[in-house]
Image (tube, rainbow, N blue to C red; front, side):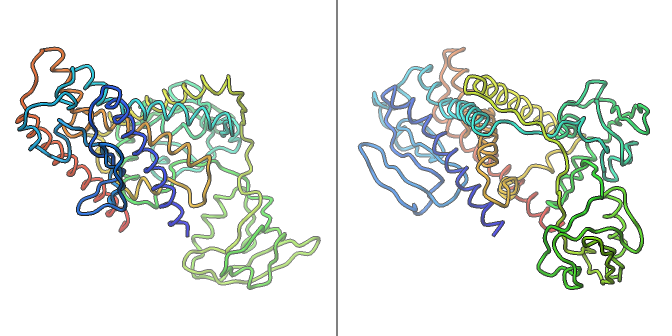
Length: 447
């Protein structure tokens, strides 16, 4: 069910983004009286899921969710319809329009993507506000994986600055390290300030680790206290429930060991897989002891309360406040995504291994339907779609823009035969990238 919900959210988000992106091209084409022969969401080789014709345009939905298209008369596009180019140009065709009009038609989709991100972020901030975990509220420090420990960070360290600049949001620590490449981390350890150098090898190693599997655990997480561990619910095959535990019981100790922090408990439990353990629990004023045998996963099958015992910062926005905040958020997201390209094109990082396809994109949606998360992710995907379409690759909007700018500057129009070959080359390149990204997904599934 969780996977089904993720797929539904992904397809709905993709449908909205593709339709509005193509609507941007369509609108500018209509403004400049350019004929649009087809308007399709998704691609439709052989057959369409549905279609209808209104006026001069055929509208429809294809069955391959790789994008969408508007087929504009007098233009070499992904349809590779070159027959019309052999006939004399008509007034209503793309090739007959001035270069500046053709340029606006081509960037119309990207403009809509960016404007859509502005609108969504403004609406999200106005409707739900903003909620985040301040780094200063992670009072018991962090729990980190072995890679982070290898550079000198320890469990319990309180990370408060990168290159001596204070970190405001806990969730920004790892993205900041990846995108801004700070040289040092400042932590508080045993009431002392410790300066930790970040070696150049850390970022490639972090990217490599994240590329290996969808089961990748976050490099750092907030550390929280073990007590009170109140049993809130049980899994279907919970061994502790079968032993007699009830909701509301408090977990006290395992094999006589009491724990200060939850990560200490987790580490101990992993050593007890397939072994019997003695669980000490408290019910009202009664101390209870159960001997249970753990399975391969070493879990008792309990959900605890409270699950996330941290004070979050929540800010509500009026509409007047949400508008500039939404614009700022969009600009920040644009900047951070552009910085990711530096990682991809840096051969030392091997970030191309982390390129993801449809499984990766679908997997970022939550397993339960959450409208706030859905719209936040849709806004970010809109930014990604806009930037990706501006890449100067023939077959993408950016490729057409590149040739149009060349025409405007040099006042020389590339030949139609050149545009045909460029379009074909661009399509081959895009298919290669698509295959690479989805091959990475398949490799992750089996790791």
